[in-house]
Image (cartoon, rainbow, N blue to C red; front, side):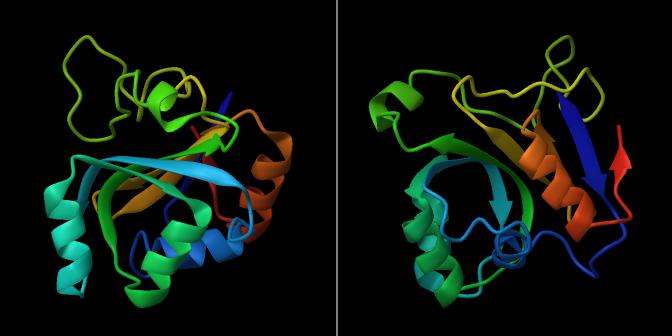
Length: 156
């Protein structure tokens, strides 16, 4: 399992639409579990959606539709890419992944040995305090794409 951090590629982090385009994810068949969210959308409709939910579980198509209407910066969030073969009910039986609000003694996604927090996730993207993003995965294709798109990456 690898954790690759991207700190110097963008002026602001993390505009997910650009990341999805860069990593060729726009047409992939995933369910996106988005958790531990702090974001400031431009459109009231999107802000309302985030305010009403502690997490989102969207198809790639649904996520892309939101981003097409309102491409905004995610300050904190975990984007767990889960193959669509899993049922939403089964996905939500597990604890929600986190990036910001972790307790002492629990898994620290920034420093501990990299691991996927959701057992069904193929990879997880993390938006970190408007400062950087990182990916955790053992998917060699995704690792290769990430390195190619963000050549100033750091492996942690």
